[in-house]
Image 1 (tube, one colour):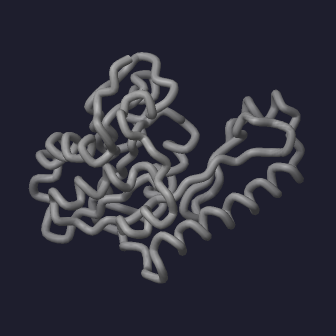
Image 2 (cartoon, helix red, strand yellow; image 1 turned 180 degrees about the vertical axis):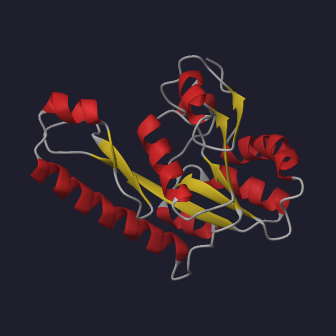
Length: 211
């Protein structure tokens, strides 16, 4: 396929044009933009700038167990872990392996949050409109874990936005958020990278600088 976006920042600018009208009447301190870190942060930064809202990060990590490449779940921002029960059962993963994975990845999420924020507190979400932004909604586990984490902070509304979203996943996600904005809805999307000309890995330093 031909890439649709030169890079994440330009994708974020295009996405902002679709998101801003949905935030009419919710500005003046009532909006917080969250980048699904690290890749979603450059996209989210464009939206935050367009609506003059604070930018923060939602960090999510896959849960994996030894000898298996397939994730058994995901965890984000101190929220309870989200598991793929079918995968757990099919792989025969033990409770001890699951517990070790949760402990390990919770620590990693905390490490990245601390590194990105550089000692700053998270931006409060309670009673505000949370705009959760990704560079591509492809993976159900990490996406749902991120939404669960944001919901745990009791925002008034959750708006989920991305330049592209797998159409099958989008149909399910609409039930979990107040609004979903995607510029492209491919029927079968397996990765976000092919949609971008420049899709370099966002380093911890870049993520911290964006915040």
